[in-house]
Length: 88
Image 1: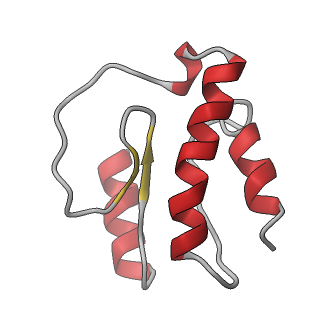
Image 2: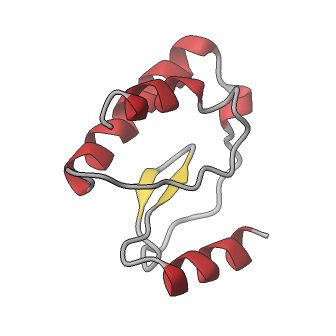
């Protein structure tokens, strides 16, 4: 499912980035090592730190209006969504 979503996004949008629990913000052509880490396995403080870590590059990439498709569950990304909502 993730590969299908990524192919669709690259085809339909001008700019695509991927969020990963271990690596943060990635671009489609970046190669990564396999890992076994999810936001579900993090406590609330770890999720908050992760959200802040990935928010800074997002803020730099999307200085004006943007739309983001988030596949993770709402609970997992709630901290990041708060930061993103403050940008618009």
